[in-house]
Length: 69
Image (cartoon, rainbow, N blue to C red):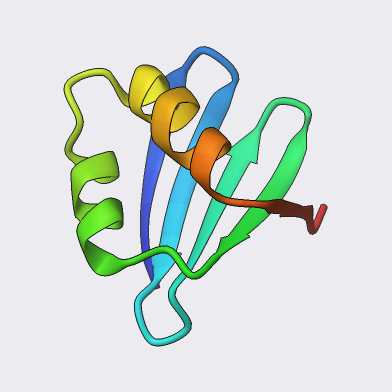
């Protein structure tokens, strides 16, 4: 699993499991899992110049979340 600590808005860390195609996002309000995220979306997200904007515009709008913590 690839992971990256971040401190942008309410985002604290982001992780991706390529084998399962699962994105895990730790936010100040909890930790959420997003299923069926492609490696390309992960690459674009983890390298975005505006991580929070990419998250809001792409991840939150296109993928269902499930609270895991």
